[in-house]
Length: 202
Image 1 (tube, one colour):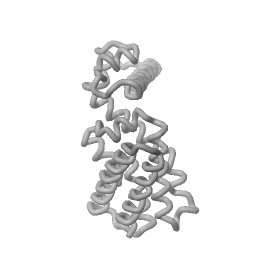
Image 2 (cartoon, rainbow, N blue to C red; image 1 turned 90 degrees about the horizontal axis):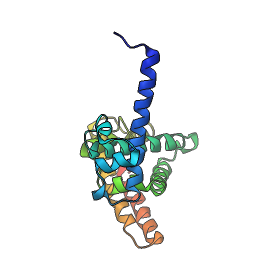
Image 3 (cartoon, helix red, strand yellow; image 1 turned 90 degrees about the vertical axis):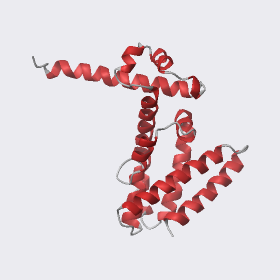
Image 4 (cartoon, one colour; image 1 turned 180 degrees about the vertical axis):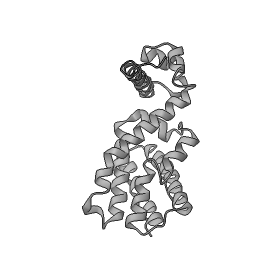
């Protein structure tokens, strides 16, 4: 028998709520517990659900961490896209790229759980690939800049350059966060801007 839409909708809503509760619980743990100590059982307990209920949505903790990363990267894209495509930045791609980097660092500052995932290399390779692709994820913003404003042609070379920039950027940002002072961190980030703009916007 077909379930009426009026009955399916609440079930879907409850499922979505449970997913968000799982992701919120794992994010909270990332903010206060060493990464190695976070298990699916601990996440389920934090979310107030059974381990069996958690496994209805995620097969292991890596899937949960990847889902958090994608959720945060989608939020970052939504946050910066208006400024990134603003009319006043059309003729200043270098300034645009610098502002995107500044925005990303600020985003990491405001979300320590995501910073732990991104800089700790706890995101799976598949998810990193998908989010670095010029056709999807935040990499799409950079692809738009290079194609529409800098004359780059879409294709494999563009994808490779964006991936290289993302990998180099992650490593240098992680290095910046290992500095002992905010001043030293800013000096590293300034050099990163110079490096990326020189590579992507010759």
